[in-house]
Amino acid sequence: MKVSDRPGLDKQDVRHMTDAELSDLGIRLVNRTDVVLQCVGCGESWAPQLDSDGKLPFDYWVCPARCNAGRVKSNRR
Image 1 (tube, helix red, strand yellow):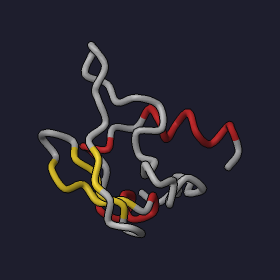
Image 2: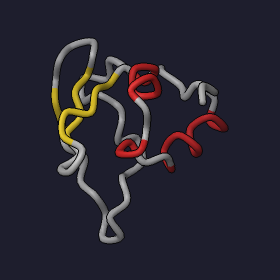
Image 3: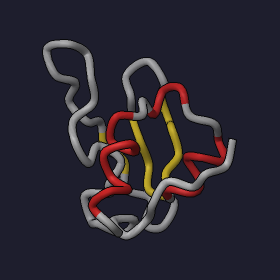
Image 4: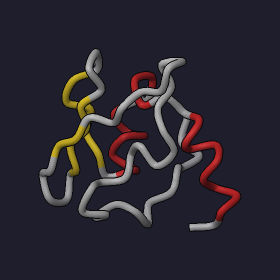
């Protein structure tokens, strides 16, 4: 993954992404309110901690097992 691809992805809030965009990242949004994600590859679930402003952390979408670490945001709209 190119470094230039990551900032836009990490600024994008998973709570507002389409199912197709989530699929491109290899994740499912299990719970939109509590932001619980699940890896499509291994099935592991995690809940990234929001910062004090309610924003998601850098790399929030990467599976703890790093199954989807090489995925990049598509240009699908």
